[in-house]
Amino acid sequence: MLTVKKVSRTFQSGATGFENIDLQVKRGEVVGVLGTSGCGKSTLLRVLSGLDPEYEGSIQTKSENRGNAFGMMFQEPRLMPWLDVLDNVTFGFSKPSKKEAALELIETVGLKGFEHHYPKDLSGGMAQRAAIARSLLSQPDILLLDEPFSALDAFTKMQLQDLLLSIWEKHHTTTLLVTHDIDEALYLCDRIVIMRGQPGQIESELFIQRPKPRKRGDAVLGELKEQILKELDFTKR
Amino acid sequence: MSSRTEAAVSSPAVQRTKIKPAPKRKWGGALLGLVLPVLILILWETASRAGWVAPYLLPSPTAVVEEMSGMAQEGELWGHISITLYRVFAGFFAGLAAAVVLGAATGYSRIARQLLDPMLQALRAIPSLAWVPLFVLWIGIGEASKITLVAVGVFFPVYLNLTSGIQGVDRKLIEVGRIYHFTSLQQIKKVILPAALPSFIVGLRSGLSLGWMFVVAAELLGASQGLGYLMVYGQNTSAPAIVIGSILLFAVFGKITDEVLKRIQTRALKWQDNLENA
Ligand SMILES: Nc1ncnc2c1ncn2[C@@H]1O[C@H](COP(=O)(O)OP(=O)(O)OP(=O)(O)O)[C@@H](O)[C@H]1O
Ligand SMILES: [Mg+2]
Image (tube, rainbow over all chains, first blue to last red; front, side, top):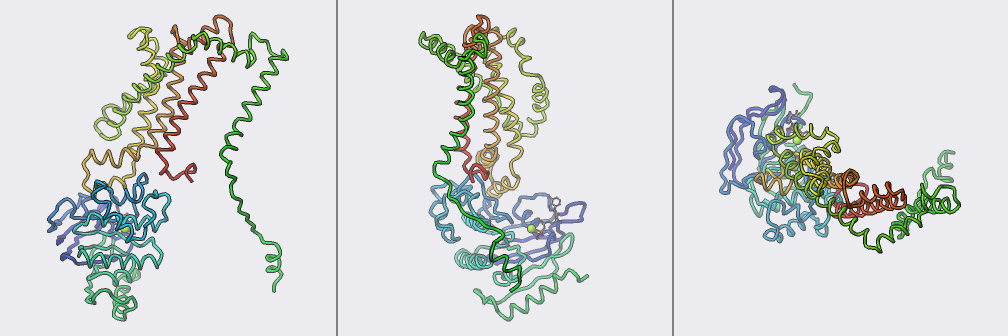
């Protein structure tokens, strides 16, 4: 679905950003990207989504509709402050055609009753949920999520993770999920890519062959977590 | 139990009582704003009646009202008011149109900005009243030169606020549009204009107040009709009541038009996260 070959994007004459990323993502696969802060994860998503054209290397997608190959959810909600929740979710589309789907998504992310609230009246978590609904509305072939749940409380986070699972089950959306939360990556992803360094590089890859939905306290996952923690350890090297 | 806890129990350090705001608070606020003007009016009236100030310098408020209502009954006043309103509005919309076109161009396109902005900034440095002799020379002392002067006054605040509003649009929101592969036109319509709206409306309000200022200037300098002319007439005939009456009328109309814009502002910007909407 997505083939990334030797892609680099660096800033400050090679001091930051990321370098030589090779990545193949199969259709329907959910790939988690874990990495230390500042190793270029957000930058990677920006390059993939086409927001940052100044990269080197090649990016190929097998997407039928070139228009919305990528859907993106940023690290911040980035809602339009002058639109209410419903209009934000349908942003970029003519409203009547998508209204039904939008209302359904709003209900799924638990914002029913807030359709006509402005972003200023939403809590941080609610705004983030509205942003999730917005990124899902276009049904992109590849969904890029940049720490989508990092601003949420533990409980809402779990609910939304399960929401993502059910969406994947329905639509088989290919997903690249950047996260800081190792448990989240282990719970949601088929494969975890670990990045580290300045500029960031792929350090290792980890396949998780447990069937989904997984148990949150799974012992095998616990062992994997140990392993990942060791890989990410700052004090090493 | 330690003595510290005891103290805390007997007298809590922080005590809060919630008081529901009285529902008539809004009216109370408006009334409070009226207190000073009313006091001043009363003082003024008594000062005139008691003869503390000479009536040929400062006539009493009632004298002013009588004078103006006399003119209104004769029908003379309406002509002055309507011609002044016409000049303000015509100038306002002319200046506004020019500012929107040029402001949008320089805000959005780098080339237009490099081409136009330095010149406009330089023109801005000229005190706008300095244009008067030139406009009179070019377009004569008819309506056109007055309207042009008002338009020049309106143009700059609107232009400056619009460009800075457009340039200040959050890049993060523009990126959302780019994710949806917006064309430039869609980007302008769906992201840039709404985001620049608050700043634009601020420009409108200061443009309008400058418009009023410039219409006074234009009418003082050469007119045979209008509220500004009425002031000159009152000065020449030593009738301070007419001058003061005209000033008050300017105040009233200036306030009304600004209030209209302010209503539009609160209506259009109710999404803004500020103290007013809290
Ligand atoms: N436009 C830019 N210009 C210069 N440097 C940049 C730019 N964008 C990102 N960087 C640098 O690239 C590095 C990677 O940034 P990025 O936002 O991708 O990190 P990240 O892995 O997403 O971190 P976090 O986990 O904290 O979100 C940082 O050191 C940052 O300072
Ligand atoms: Mg990031």
